[in-house]
Length: 421
Image (cartoon, rainbow, N blue to C red; front, side, top):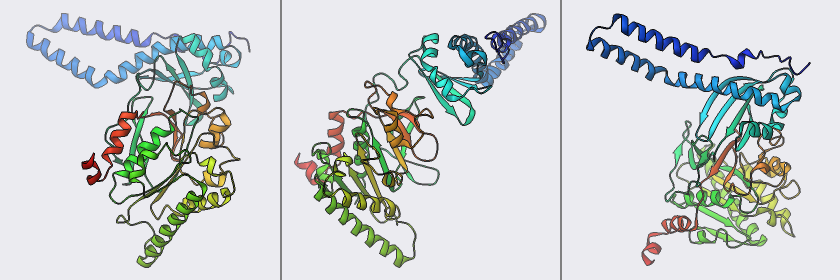
């Protein structure tokens, strides 16, 4: 098919219907006012009715004009891409304003795939003079979202971490922890159900911010048991005063895991005696954090540690145990799939390759548009959050600076220790 023969008629992109309707409405209102209005009261009533209509339908009117404006702009951008997309340009269904730009919801035709559109993202950004263009799936195979960014979607400067930790609740009553915001400025939360969490990303990508927020939350829960294993010795050392146990070596990890398994067994025996299936609310929650877990999975006791982690993650949910595995470069050779698959929450901060992103989020995530390797080094705290219930959420975690971290750690001190300071 020649370039001039496109499936979607050009008139769909060149219609001036919204402008024409607006002109007709204004002209009609002006004529009716001149012809029939004869008093101040009538003018007041008319203005009130017009104001009410504007208030009621302003969102639709603004979106209609936004849609009309962007279909004028996006069609030439598709044409400049050349190839099949130029011959069969996607149809713009809807446009939605975002704090940093606009989201364009399009329908793909004649064999054009999400991948084809994603490959042209950089060219679209150049044509539209945008900072960045991101193409995301939109639920159906022939639907996509083109996000045109003209600024930082997460704000500049980045949001700092909170001085206090607040929690919310999901419709089913489970607790959630706010950890940051998405591109539209909406709050992003992690469900605090017992189970497993895998956190991956390169050094400086923002993993520690999430871990500190999570530990700070558990540190405020009465009776919560916190087990920290930190081979680097310094990343989690500020929480030693609140940790039930703190370990740095493979031997420490095995000993701590054995203790956790013992507590887990006792809780299951008690549940069995009570005839219950889940952990009771009167049992304090347990948090187990493995900082740089891949370094513990290499060496003489690696197999023992891996088997115990798998056991706790597989059986610890009903006992109220949350396991967090943090790794710089998680891979199939260092973090077994049988362990990763037990984690129902995963967070991928900046990675070096799409394969590493897939290791964290699941196979095929990168090709579906959720590729953490495309996050640049200056986007600290930015990553993808997957809770297993829907597509990963592109978000930025709160950045916890040293001062904020110290405040969080001091506020979790037992009363007698806080008084001494």
